[in-house]
Image 1 (cartoon, rainbow over the protein chains, first blue to last red):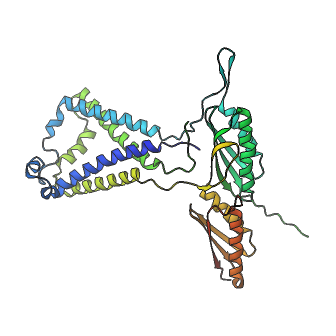
Image 2: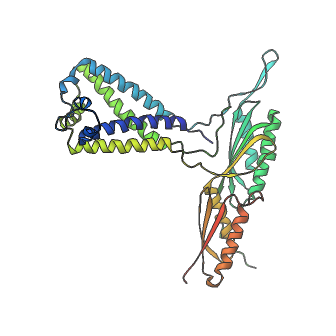
Image 3: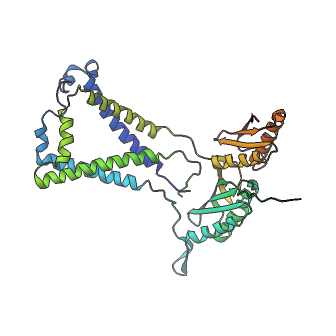
Length: 202
Length: 185
């Protein structure tokens, strides 16, 4: 029902992964001397030897412009990381207010999607075998995309519930918006029916 | 129109959150250290000490070799997480609707497992039910103490589960495999 930023995650994981792999290959190659059999001699001359310190001249870091450059790069990466982290919060991507009649001369009629989805949820909960429901309306009035999450009991007639999701829930939205749905999504979850231990004597 | 699929591939939220958090903590610390260097004229000691430890290592030391190997492994894991598509979630139900141009009906694997468990639990002689469901199949393991009627119990459970998962009358939403364990009395 909620949207997670899959493409963003995969892109940034690929970028970070590539940087880390290159860094790891460089460090391992220099540390083990593996590059000596792979790289040409003029490139090898520029690489540090295995017995040299990792940072040969620490004084080079004690210059003001180094602190400025390092600080700026770190700040940019920190801001990008913070935005990436915030993007992980799942979003419903619900439609904006629906414009039912769009002429500013005769007046605008708008409807919040929550008005429609709350009605759908209430109607869904009244269906036999349905114990919980939530709905999201995406798209626009001309291309409405309704997604319904139904929680049904494990003894319910699931086929009948699915048929009613179309003929009752979707049909109500079609009537309300006066347009056929562009898409109907139904996500079904099942919960165990509560069992009681009451006894009967015949 | 923005369309959100119900049967999604993994969005890699966990590795993304971990990497973003590590990057944020490290780069925020470096930013604070840089600002401190610009204001006070020296790098703060909490940054100098670990940096000095790294700087003193030689390239051939075990610490550097290990760090390089760890970086390689982590990088490959991140690349695999980015490149491998992963399995789609949910089990599709081919249900055509009248009131929409297109439809997508999905049952969660947990939902299918619970439906199967409820159906198996209705069979006489079944004392315990364990069910696991994936996209391809639902595996039902029932326990019974009816030693002589194992085949009958297996057939009844198979029939009951298949019937319950035949949501639309066109066959079960996934393959059903049933096993029976006989309880020692």
